[in-house]
Image (tube, rainbow, N blue to C red):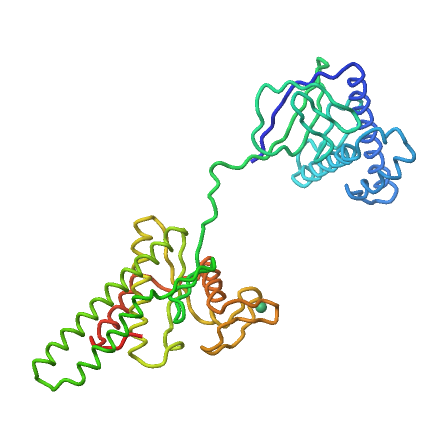
Length: 385
Ligand SMILES: [Zn+2]
């Protein structure tokens, strides 16, 4: 958003003369450049552009050395104004306007502009290249970044400095902070920000306890009291594992939701990764739960979770897009383009990109529901991976 600030400046007598001279040099350049455009059109039928004339300006300076007294960008800006005048003229011609307004020679020039450089505000001084340090009265502060400085003489011979300022639009929406999440076997979660969440230790320990309890159960005679006790033992360990898993999934999903507005997961294709049906179910259950937990936390926080197509997220290079085939053993993504990163991080970055492009696949709730049904059919005694 551009806005303008206007301040009165108080040049000394000598500075006022230099300002007047600058105005007059600009006026002369305008007239020269306009004459050049007319001549070249009448003689050769050609149109001069701003670029042509800016290049010619260097030659003009040897013919008219007084132009060297003016800051070069100020002179270029005169040529740009002439270009705008011609652009407007041609536009009116195209629109068949009644008044075409062909640019005119000027007997008075009212302002000149430093379009980029050559000016500086320093307290109560405005420092102008080739002119000097002029007293300025700043009756209010400037918000934003100053882009141009125009010096203008009023009809009552007062001088003003006009600053064009680029201000950030207060209504501009910050770009959504997004996070790609890769769910894995080695690590539970790897994010596109390079965070690694391990499967918690106590969770792994509990799995060992479960295996032990299951072994014990298998040794007990069918229908015996001991077998009944062993069964209860196994069920208890299962419950503990479930609680530990949920606790850790709640922690991880909380961390994911807290740091992003948009969280992107894969719509998982577990077949590709895990051989063996039961392990697949268990993993699916855990990953599925993580997505569910994240989803419900996101909903409460007004954030979004999407699932994207998992095809090639592991093979694809997150830098150049080339596919590099991998087996489960390949832990590093190494591409000919020079990118060498952890395979899971590469996948998380691909997932993020897909999510940002809006590559969501299907309705989240129905996907989660259908997965829950699959998982619900699995047996209680299934080994935990
Ligand atoms: Zn690459």
